[in-house]
Image (cartoon, rainbow, N blue to C red; front, side):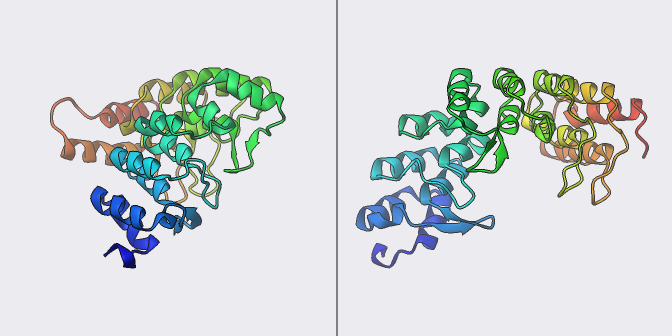
Length: 269
């Protein structure tokens, strides 16, 4: 069976958590560990990338043990560690112990002030050349006030970082970015979302979303702003509340309280 294994088939096995089949395949054909597939419009995804994205801890450990490269990058510059930071935080330490490098973007996200400062001293640009994402957005996405302040002190422009902080429910970071001049109504060029949309949409992911929404409203965010497809923050909150009610019983959905906040602030509809 494994003699006819392709990297595409291996990718499916990895994503499905077929640990035994994957172990057999990479033992018989070690080259599959470095073979890549395309995903999300970018080439360069190894089996390890796919395992991390799927949150498959035993699979990640097995692939690393078999010799998978934790430093491999996709075509758009993402390492397995970058994926773990955003999609599977529980795998961060597994990858670091396997030798995954903590670059400037990872240090910003993890709040490692000294590592980030050394990288900046060595000339690393404020926009990560590998991922084409500004380091401030990485720090904001991680909800790390320390590395956010380091980057602001080094001249980073608030720009899109406010979206990342709002989506992660990180009020301390939101407050720091607003104080640094971030626009509470900055638009995502692709979706038209403002930080207020991002905060409400990210309510289920944790963090202190209510505090973030309050900060944005106090900063003058347009409560009736709509995305490119016509959705307001209130629309997003109501859809999220209905979904949360359908999925769980008990306490009222967080999105219900967000909807009330938005209506109190003058949201129409």
